[in-house]
Amino acid sequence: MRILIGDVETRRIRWQSKTGWFCLLAIGLLFLPAAAPLWAQAARHEYMVMGIHPHALIVLDTSRDEVVGEISLRGRAPKEIDCSRDGRHLYVTTEGRSQIEIVDLVNRKAEDVIRLAPPGYKFVIYGTALSTDDKVLYVHVKPVRLLADEYQAEPPQILAYDLSTRKSRKIAEVPEGVASLIALGDGKRLLGWGRDLYFIDIAQGRIIDQFPLITPDPSHGPLNSLPLFTQYEQSGIFSIPYYTTNPLNGKSLMGLVNIDVETGKTDLVDLGPAVPLYSAVVSPDRKRAYAVMNQLVAVDLESRRVTNVVDLDQTKYVTNISRDGRKLYVSGAGPFMDIYDTQTLKQIKKIELSGDGSVTALRVVPQDAVR
Image 1: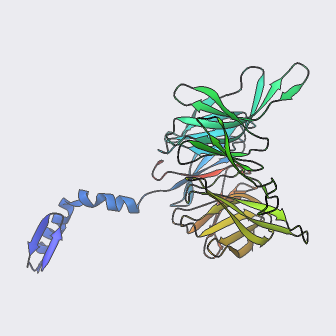
Image 2: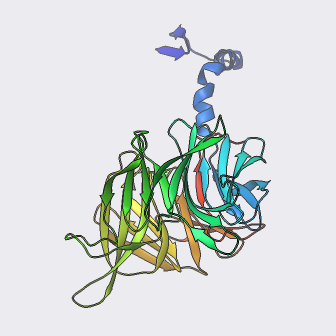
Image 3: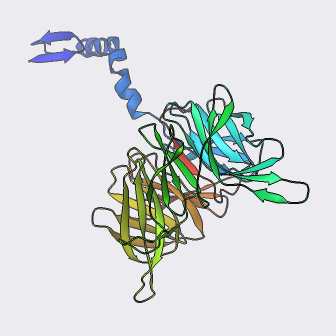
């Protein structure tokens, strides 16, 4: 018989005494550092962050399903949240979407505020996205010029804010209605989600392609969507419910607009009779989706049909999913986070929060970024 422990080989040895077993244990402990990375993987933590009113972020350990930290912000009403790929920094819109706070996630403090509006202007932010190298923060703003006797709205635009030089430049103007922004995986394009989907070439500074939603298209009727909730970290699919009306019988229909954030490929998933929904998230294996409002809805993306619907105790706005796809985290009106089993849609746990999450984002942090 051969027993291998690390690089040690022991041939035809019979351990017949306690002394023998202790020797084997000692040899195993001697080579413990080689096995440590495997053990560390089993104990790795997973985190989500979410804004709460009036001015804070919570840090949720989804390995234990407990709130393990709260970070005070300088402004009120956090909305968009973007996380750096190393998990060290968050970029959070606050104070009526007028500013962006840079949050040190490791040390749990708001360390700076980005104010993009020049003197005489007010900017309202709808959509932020980090570049693929974490060097640039792209921001969609609606500029308003503050004149002595009137407010003058100017065309919406996308700015590139260099995080090292702290300077911004205009990338492109975009149509009215953009509510969220995604930096696609090629590092060359941005996706602006508004009445339609706008693909923007960063170098050229212009819209180079458009996927029709509201705009009439022979393949489908006008589609309405509310792209305020960007939860795609686990699957790489940005999913938002859409609604339309059957022109023949006037009945409301729903579906999902699913976008691969790496490639920009877009898929419309028709799901039949409408259930009012605010936001959706796709499972890590891309086989299922879950959406929330007054109900929690499960969707089989392979068969493209709704498989389960359960009533919720109150209105929910946002949902995200665990890395293993087994737990769903749901929040909205009220200072609570509800956790559901994704297979049964039964509630597992309710976590009480120190503030109302409302319509803020709920984002997954890269694994082991916070402790």
